[in-house]
Structures are given as C-alpha cells and as structure tokens.
Figure 1 (cartoon, rainbow, N blue to C red):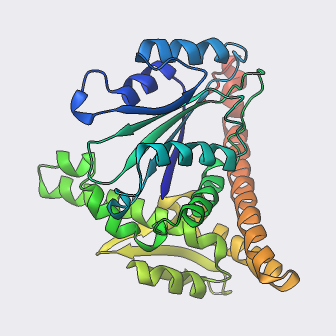
Figure 2 (spheres, rainbow, N blue to C red):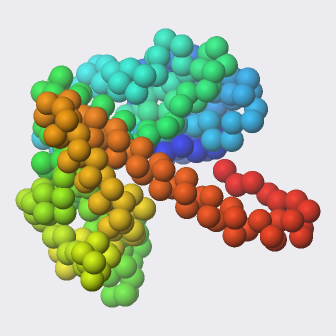
Length: 316
C-alpha cells in the first residue's frame, strides 16, 4: 500500500478530479464520505468550503491522498474493505473521521486498485488538522495497515507496482528520444524517492542504506572530502543517475549523515524496536530543521529587496 500525499488549495478542482463527472470511463465510485454531499462535485466542494470558512487564513486546506495497492490484491480489496481502510488511514494520522469532513472515491481506470481520499484540514470544531511530517507519518500508517489487513508489503514490490501502473503522463507525452530520456529519468527519481522513504530513516550508515536499496535495484555512490565527511551522494537505477538532493533535500549527503547519527545513537540507547521507531521520528525532525534553516537563509537574502519595495508577497 502506497499513499501519495499532497496539500492543495482548491476544493472545487479536487472534487471535480476525484468524481470525474466529465470522464465516466474512469468509473469513479464514492465508497464513503462524512459531512459532505456526494451527488455532485459542486455540492461536495461547497460543503467542504462552508467549513473551511471557519479558518479563512488557511491557504492550503485540501488534504489529498492517493492510496494504491498491488494488482494482486484486487480480489481482496472490495469497495467495503477499501472504505474501511480509508477510515483506518485517517485514524492512523490522528484525524478523527467523525469530526472531520472527508470523502473517498475509487477509480477503475487502472488495473491496480486505487482510491482518492479528500480531507478538509479544518475540522468540524474549526480547528486546523496538522500536516506536520505528513509524508513520514503516512508511510508508517501504510505499513501498519498492510500488517493489519495482511496485504502485500509495498516496499517489497515497489518497482513491480510501478510497472503495473504503466508509463507516467510525461512518458506518454514523450515524442523525441530526448523527451523520453527525461521522462524515464523522472520516473527513476520517483521510484528512488519511494524506496528511500522506507529505508533512509532505518539505516545507520551509507553502507547500511546501500545494502537496503540494492534488492530494489538501486545503487548508491558516495564521494567524500579530504577530511572524510560526505561530499555528495548519487543513486542509480536502470542507468539513470539521480543526486540525493534532486530526490529531496532530506536525501542530500549531509542530511542523510545527520539521520544516520541519530539512528546509531538511538539504536545504542534503546531496545531495537523502540530505537527504530524513534529514529524515524527524529529523522523527520532533522529534515524539518534543514528545511527551516534553508528557508531562513533565503529570507535573509531577500530582505534587502523587500525593504526597498516597502512590501512583499507571501507564498503558500
């Protein structure tokens, strides 16, 4: 089970996408919902926006999760089971399904089972639903659901499922060799990122991470400075080379080394089961700290121009 999480702005656009009213070939089917009408995208979006209005300053109030499963699970994943999984997923993220608006819609346009979960980040009490560490929390929740429902472990079949999903839209649009190469590289980067989300927070060194990635067909290449500190890391899959920072800031050589140190420290101080779990949480904290530091640097660099213009615009 893989959960692809995004936080967006428009309930109107999201509801039109999941209900696919203009493209019935996708066979969109509402499995379950709470607090919103499901007879049309317009009604659903209006219900979401009515509650969102309690937090007018929250720009990105739309939590969208695409939940996908291996094709081998198709017989097991009835609509009723997928509806229950969606609610268990919400509970795993500490989102109360009884006090939050949400809707889950299954699409039938692919051979593998998948559904789209739309959630209002403003609950029915007017409180904001946190999206802090949402990506890493989603990975943990998916693993727990796999165990609870006896599902195939996604990180063991990630590449097989990627092939089953078929070419990405960018690959489908590619008409020249250069465009095809670029699309294939982007696909490799996505698969490397998926594998790292399962492995990076559990490894205590580059050697351990290399061994964890190798069964997934991914190689790790590391360069070091004269003092022995990591200078750069590159991941290679099917002939495509991707820098760690191109996958995500948290996967740069320096940030990975920070995460490894936490794993080693916690592994020595706690029993293994507690250590690995806490290591993943601390790895997410290290990721946030790195992003915060980079944001502060960008803000400092932009400050002179802001003072000259006597105003600035704040992005989402």
